[in-house]
Image 1 (cartoon, rainbow, N blue to C red):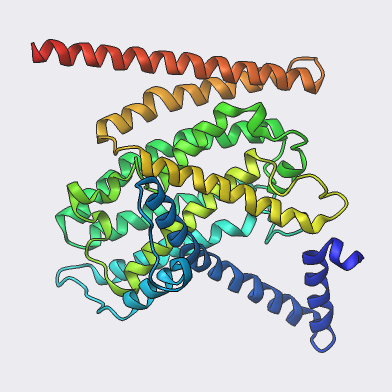
Image 2: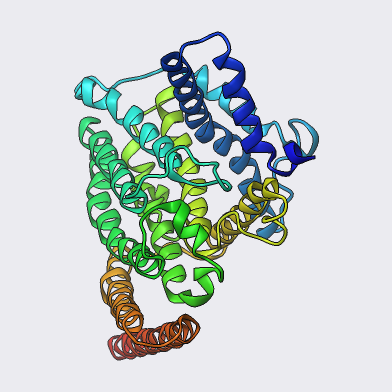
Length: 387
């Protein structure tokens, strides 16, 4: 019964004990790192196969359609059929492309998507490496995808790909600022950058104490993953397929895998930072419940992001950048300053958290009010021009 209570950790310990019987300690370490590496490689593939089917079903329901229903029961094998079709396509490289950079870009973007999972805790003791700079690691690894997309757009020798790459610089770097500030708010409240300690510190989920930081993070995460309504990097109606227009076959597949792996990763990070991670009722008595709580919370966040994609139209590039710099960045800065001040007050933690919540609601109300006034002024100007 004790084995079942903490099944996943006990299983890992039993595996280590088993291989230790016939291998020296250094070989055991190498084998364990190889197993973790294989899991990190498989995570993006599993995420893609699962989320493509889920997203098609969700978007289909939003648009009053059925979604995939031909390949397997309920269309669950549609993603596998698409993967087979993609793998048998010809790999074409443009004549004037910069071949080394062109070939390296999809590998780099897929590697960055896989490395994000190294510091995400799925349960108590279930983490690849609980770095003391885990939050900083996530920010650093996440920025690699920007470089990879720039490499893909520039090396393709295609004007549409190049325009898509230029938009990367504007969009991803703009929305990385509020994302970093929202993560910094959580780090301040937790007093640590270790992902495990951040989860342990959430007696109350930080998303309830810092709802504004959670909202800003989710909006920035949508932009960072290049999904609607912030999908200007690959806007089909404007620049065809964007930065990876010249890619086909397996190389195109790496970009596709990276997109859905990033979708699952940012949702898992939101769960870890704001929703209590693997914490939930009964976890103290049965730690094996932790990964199931973590998976359920992550799926809820993924569904919300898919819901937003299916219901909101795409922003113009000027609207998107103005929203980042005139709304999200000032709100996140004000929120960070408010949290820092509240943490210095000589009052009990419960009072501090209540004041933080009140400040978050106040900053959110002011931001929404200013956005409403800006929209009204824009509408009045449009009316004057029309007259």
